[in-house]
Length: 73
Image (cartoon, rainbow, N blue to C red; front, side):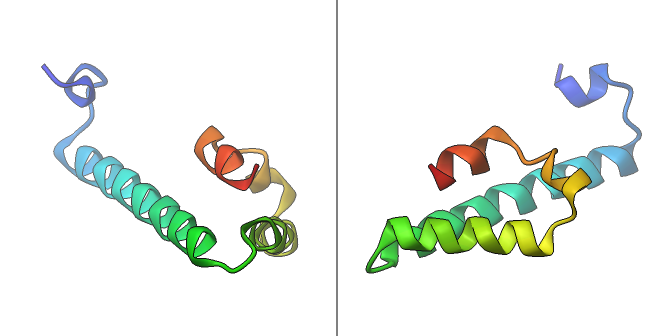
């Protein structure tokens, strides 16, 4: 039995949750790729952190997950 069934998600909620998870994984992959292809990965991480601080409101920044935090270290 999958966890979404145990959470009593409707079929639509399950679809949306899976779509969000997919988007999250794709975004992290793109960020990781861009950092790895940069001539100066540390500088790229600093710029990305600055863009996040500039463009993401503080309440949302509090929800940044561990995967992104690890990627920016």
